[in-house]
Length: 311
Length: 325
Image (cartoon, rainbow over all chains, first blue to last red; front, side, top):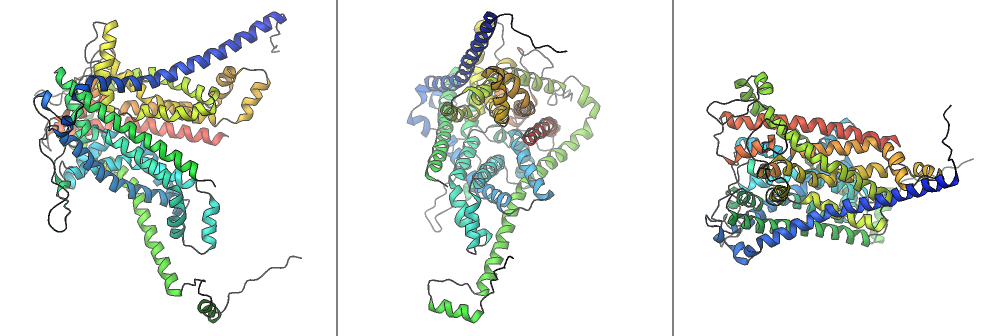
């Protein structure tokens, strides 16, 4: 028979209890230490980038082209490229991602076909980003003959963040109570009217959060852009999207060659010359600052919307 | 007896009468109703097409990787690909053994897991079982930021901060090595492991904890002997998803681990991973039909298969822990 170990005396019992309580307190300390050292890494990393890159963190850095001379090099073409790529990415990922999420949450019947779509979305979220680069290289660059252009890069990153946008939008839509939909249906609204007039406005905060987080991921993605052949030395800007004549907008920039912030940083960091590593640190500080800022905005938006809505 | 209340539809004439006399009541005509239904159907089709983009993306990934690697495998026998110990597809005397790249990938992954599994698990246990509500809600978004840092910035961190720091203790450590790349990847995947494990532990029903407390267990005992075993499949899923992340990580290794394929299990040596090789080839300007160009798709196919196995295992496990309770 399995005997329960009986304490020999009250003293050993006390000792046992206090030992276990000590273990408890010890773990709290270990947990806090691990947690805060992980966060400390982030702080140290950011401060070090700023400190190393401080001599280059000037307006000149933002308004100069890359150069063979480290002290004259800047990130003008890189940040313009990144902005235009993000524009394409947002314009593609936002409508497609939100529409796909609406379909899955509000329209899709429960059958094997819907299950296939859902498995695909979850699986795509786990595909390494460089695989998206290979997809884009084979599909966009060579099959669709888009070449190594801004539109190819934007589409690639849009596909990459699509699962993030879809998952965030679905969660936001799911948080809208059933009663609101039923009230609208009871008044004779069609499914689309219920979605567009009631569900979407309520879930806007969650959708925006997902979009910002998706873009903050896309802004730092390097591998897929290298794979499709981003150039790291571009001393010119893409064609301007605004023109002097009617219709005042031009889309010629979509087909221009590009470089981007993370590409520029990768190029500088892989040079042995320490002068370029200062540039890399400055570019990294800006890149990391932008990512943190976007995530901060996302957290704030989520917080605001959560506070505003009381079901 | 239950009497049923019957609502009979009003005759159309009466509705029209109501509509003309009470202007505030909106009664759509039949044509309008039909139009709305038609519009709804068109919109539904559009939404379905958007959802199908995900399926098409998966299919295109498989298609592109297979289609572009077929010429590679016509040139290189599969046996050589899997057993040769040299990977030099860009040399004049080209050898096509994937083993060095797989070894590099596995070594960096193991180092990363050595950091991320203990740290992620401890953080998850702390946040799920010990942390006060306010602390948990504020600290979790901050922790997620660790996973949001651009990977190229982590590459800089590994090459120019972690490696010099390690060299203070191990002066013979080369400038490029898998150790610091792996350590940094480990830090990067802590939030994934912590958040999935924490979800798994929070899914453990409270009555199990209460039972344990009632028996006089401390919080630490409850966490390690009741909650942890109960959430085991979810925690395993977190580890596996972390492995998949580490295997696919590109920029950190491309910057900090060196780009030379090197068949070694020693993390202090430089070596290339599958992902680093793809980056290295893409940086050069290879013609579309060359064997070098095709080799990155073959490498990509291997990478895809590796992550696919881990992802499927991970998702199966997560689904199981969700269904248990």
